[in-house]
Image 1 (tube, rainbow, N blue to C red):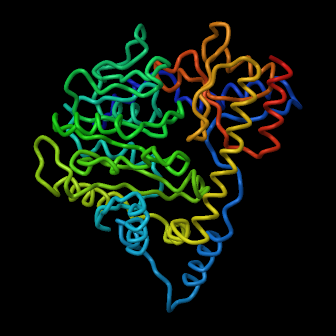
Image 2: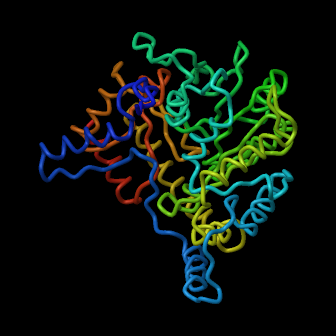
Length: 407
């Protein structure tokens, strides 16, 4: 008799972004002709840099010729791209071997799948608020007994609160945990951990034989040279951290799909040997993954250096220009805002003690602007909204003008 994975039934109310879409579509269906301005989901909007397009076109030309056609590539990713990433990280003074890089079709899947490497009995800690995939993948993985409606969080998980008092940077756990999910620059708060703050987590992980799962998908948005762009800028991190990253937000590859994960050979857990976790992830990828698109990988390689890198920097600067407009505009109507300086996200406090969803509905129905309710990212996200800088400049300006006019 076939049975289902009942851990899916433990997931709390609907996934955040489909719920936003449901409410938005309901409003549009009931209010024909209304134009909504979307500053919610972090989906890039500007065209791909031509230097990356040219690189992918050149790859397509090779695939159109029988003599240069290639089918399946290495599950770990093209060697040239992995070597390109080795050089990319050398800018931060970090040295890797290309076999420590694994090319993916985006960071989200790896952020979920990486938990397959670890035992179900592991105690998991998350920044709170956090990108939902970290929590939900561990729920489905069977690491919680269920959702506590009264507390607004899952049992058996450790929530590392990120709030105004600590500058949205969590303290290290005060109990022993096994896996720690960190994201810096953070989605959704926009906060960036400095070197000393990251070092505290690295020191904790090394002492407790814990492993940090570090999401660096927004690293290219860090403008301040004193802030780390990779956890591996911290001494000792190779022994206790895995880093997941993506081309989605710096190269506009949200639809093209391309990312990477670094699993150092020095990485060890409480019960593993040096090199074992790297070998396990390699086996996992070879068994369950056929590799990222070779066309996308050609574009990714172009994004790492030369004109392609400069074009990607220009794209990032465009979105950061949007972030400046959004933050200034929201502050002008009296909202308290965080982030938006080294991150594409602005984390704004709701006015008049409104809940996150109440303010979402107000902005939707009164200002015709769609944002993301902070409570969807965890209990500490209540009373905040996340505003995304991903959008056409003219639409961003129009959205902020509407908020100024109607608040």
